[in-house]
Image 1 (tube, rainbow, N blue to C red):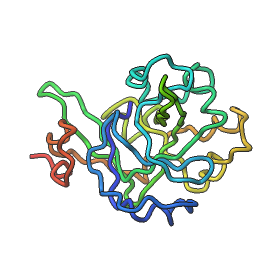
Image 2 (tube, rainbow, N blue to C red; image 1 turned 120 degrees about the horizontal axis):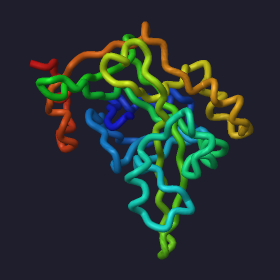
Image 3 (tube, rainbow, N blue to C red; image 1 turned 120 degrees about the vertical axis):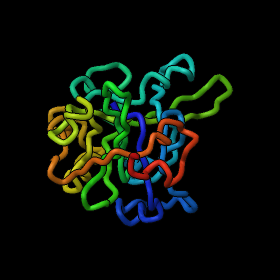
Length: 218
């Protein structure tokens, strides 16, 4: 799964993803956790702030979204919560890295995984809009995960889908709705282009949202 990620340098997103709008004043985020607000790039090429934890438009109550932070690539086209968004409401979720925990006999060791280039990348995401009884709208998203690549496999058996820059236009194309055209994009990213480093256990607390969490592990 993908339960934490970071986004440092969000001021460049407008240029990186050629969006129609900007979200001024976005702070760097070092420890983004489920239920918090995250930036997405919609298939209308718009930047939006939405809640992490997809709440389908047909859900009866808002707490449903706590169960849907990740969608598995293998079943995203058929699961009721995701099949509609997979066809019509795909997005990119910008990140500069994500975190995963290696389970050892001594305890869990957090790792920060990123591109060797240090560049922002787009994770494959889905979004939806839900309206409560008072007519208030809540937009939310989920991150699609796939099997681990060779770098990730010793740490965890899943990783977020990172869409290659050359595939981003296809992923965001609102005219493309056929699962058979989209499914091939949901593959593990090239391990040779990524790196992983153990980091401080400060990452374990979502309230710790500073550079401290990226310090090398003791």
